[in-house]
Amino acid sequence: MKNGISTLFTQTNKLPTQIPGRGIRQYGLLVAFVAVCLVLSLTTPKFLTVQNLMIILTQVSINALLAFGVTFVIIAGGIDLSIGSMVAVTGVVAAMFAHPDTYPVAVPVLAGLGAGLLFGAVNGFIITRSKVPPFIVTLGTMTIGRGLALILSKGRPISNLSDSFNFLGGGKFLGIPTLIFILIALFIVCSVVLKRTVLGRYIYAVGGNEQAANASGIRLTTVKMVVYTLCGGLAALAGILLTSRITTGQPNAGTGFELDAIAAAIIGGTSTSGGTGTMTGTLIGALLIGVISNGLDLLNVTSYYQQVVMGAIIIGAVVLDSMNQPGND
Image: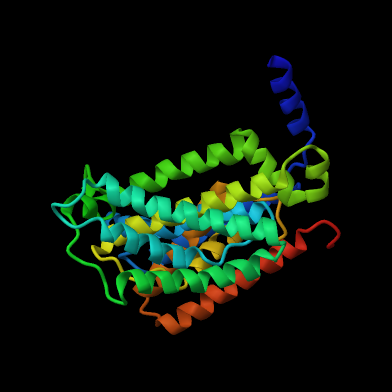
């Protein structure tokens, strides 16, 4: 048994590591984040208030959870466009079991979480078995998910949810929104999984070089199934918490969320070609998006211009990522 474990660690130590220079980019991102905060605090007096900072963290939480999940997938060399629809499906499923005087709060949570894990596993199964590009598969399941949310809810919002369920995403503990505690806890868990476990090393290896990973004895199918299932589980948590926060199961919830989550991961340094990325970078990316969006709101910039700004930031991050790829001088 000891020899088996020893061999496993010997093998993982030979796996590819991250590209040098990513750490420098992450520090640059942190500097940019601080600079944006300084500019906004000087131009908008309301920005650097405790109340506004709480609002930013609360609004960022849902996007950050989705971004954590999609970071696993992108590092493994894939993509998941269906997470926005998963937010809707899982939120509707949870809301169906969250009426007062029916089930304990654990039931809607487990129902929504189970739906998300199943959805993610189906994504992983189709991608690994059919060899169809993840972009195409998850584009299809994105539409299927949205349709399922409308079918289950009959096209109408599901309201009259229990107070205990609504507390999960809309309550406060010690004066701090519960979403912030959940965000911190899941950031720690995801960081540990990615950086401190064999699974995390396998994810980097598969995304960095599939052939080398396969030659090292890593089961590519298993790793990909796990990352898509993890992504589905985190999307389900986001859907449950969003439903709890808005106290309604909305079949149209989560529209466009996949783009914000992918943007947070890429801005945070996760390479679109796989093999590189960190949860810390993704968290900073999500915070940067949230701070810019909040600052533009405070400066009374219309949502139309905000979309232009966010699109420009995403393009800039992708261009920077492309320039950092090996062979691109």
